[in-house]
Image (tube, rainbow, N blue to C red):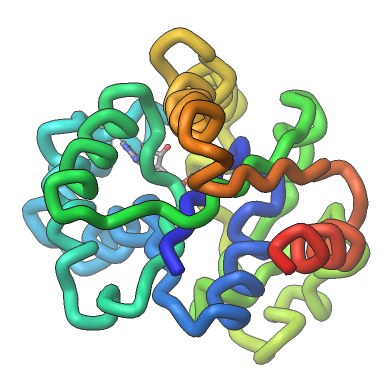
Length: 226
Ligand code: AMP
């Protein structure tokens, strides 16, 4: 199963992505996580990406596109993948489509989580990262995934806030890119919706209302995935 997962930062995409990954037993490939791992390990890639990430800008396509296309060739991707945070602009969408078409690989599902920009911004400022597992969602403003004191609600691990999550200018910058329907992320999402419309609903488009709580959104998602 090959799935693209779109949704603005703060929509709960990471939380729902972890559930989709379990359902299909596929790797959850998150571009932002790959970058952050490289930053904490101090790799050349991390050093290069850090400034862009802190400002809320996209890491250049010349770095990001080959990095993801290579990741999709890894052994664990043979049975499928869930791509989260890529494509993030129209060029990345076109390049992904081109690379997959060349290999005759079809995307099965495109999930589009829809959420108002202001709600997404509030949620971003409340989220916390678990030191032990990136798939342990915690958010101080969402009851269903509130941390246990200052510890991870799943494993008790220590929590931290991402610096780019506490910087309003960086959030606005990231959302500006996401909600841009000309060349930004929504343009990338619409690119695949247009393919679906011309191709008898393949890939299948799953639109999700991101406003309800985690459980309600995941119930809707499971119902729509079938
Ligand atoms: P995220 O964890 O998805 O919020 O991503 C954090 C940051 O990583 C973004 O604000 C960008 O700076 C960078 N990033 C993530 N995905 C991409 C992408 N597909 N293309 C370029 N930069 C990205």
